[in-house]
Length: 412
Length: 228
Image (cartoon, rainbow over all chains, first blue to last red; front, side, top):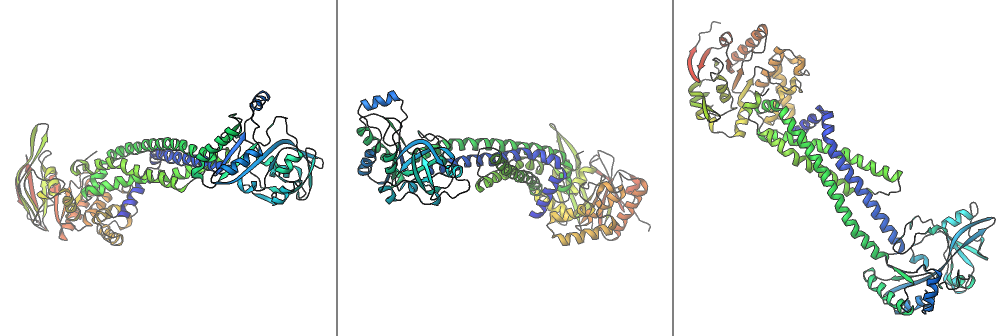
């Protein structure tokens, strides 16, 4: 019998018992849908993580001051540590091999005012190359220039949130804002950043949109430290040329700082690349679990198909006998029933794909969980459902083919 | 055309071998109209199964057009049933979900015939049995006589060597039964070889040669002079 006749026969077998076929499909439908949904949630989380670490720079080593209480601060000062300083940054730049750039930043929490509006902000003093190092993008204007840095000009770049709050109507470029008690000219506005909403390693989550950036030289010249014993700067970001040697580089940075801080650990070192690798490893376990769940649900779906197909063969003994008596070979009967099982599992698989894709979209639409549907997950889920149909349709089909025509034709 | 040589068929029930056919020797020529009659349990159904290639003898030989059927494998038997045997059953044995045309086309599908030719042949067969107007009807929408006509069309559609009718009037009222037997008569007149299995003497009388079996053996084999 030709293939097209087999397909026609299988489809009519499914559509003749729509409700029963649908119930049989449920296992496959939910199996496929759950595989696609779970994979898309996993993929979404992975992308978010990668974006998060890429945001911090995969070639970056971030050295950040430790949050110490006044007592602890006094203690480390008594043990000769000067805290993070520009000098530290300078030494790292000189000693560390394979270093690309070193940026220092000092921070102060204060109010930024324009006209009658004011907004709480983190004012960050940075060097000129900071923008490229951190992968930030400008919305308008320009970032702090080398010349502005060198001549300690009173210019600033606003984070997107600050700009929208202070300048609802007017173009902020060229306007003067008051930061703490200093007037600064706005030279640029950053594009909005949604990321860095959760703690990464030792780096606390912070809304980067409320940042205001100044030349570090201006900052150190114009603003007093929050406390007398505070560190000179809050963060040193070291960019290396090659992420392959970043772990050794970070260890070396640690050695340098340990010596310079007289073994006082008043800083933390965060290597986003290393964290990314770690998280990838954890995700592998998670993916394996997902795979296991998916396999089990599809297995259960397959058993459901087998169960119904076995019952169908019993019920259709007479039909099998009739077909055999008018010339159907064993192989014809066999392929008829396998095709029917495959038709059920393919239809179930297709419905499952639609359901899984919709579920993923619904999840990302109504919750904070971000999802990402990859083509390969659809292909895998669908291919599995077809394989399940073939495997679990085989035994019932074999039973059907092995029925003796003499007996089955007279079966009541 | 058909030649049975020392055919024996035993059935195993538990540990006992029950003989259903004991040493049958039979010769049926092309174009004959033969009835096989016998009480229930006489072995006539077993004989029909063997003649219809649904079953093979325990020993002995069955030659169909010179081919020894008793040594064929399952696929070859299927092909044999498909091309050479036209079955007509007491209870019609049509597929309930297919309409008349599809039911008649079915053997040709298994023969691998292209769709267009299949349809043409099926239409011819249905026309021959006088059911051209019932192509789209499913068996449930047809009367008993019409269903049997569809079944006969299905048996005829492959142009088989023999028509094998197993109690073809058993499920019909007597008037319809007479009509069906008239149809068989016509088919015989057109040159078809017909084997009719029945336990009713009146039905057997339609045939030109009556074989009576009892206890698995041929009890009598008589040719009848037919007055036209």
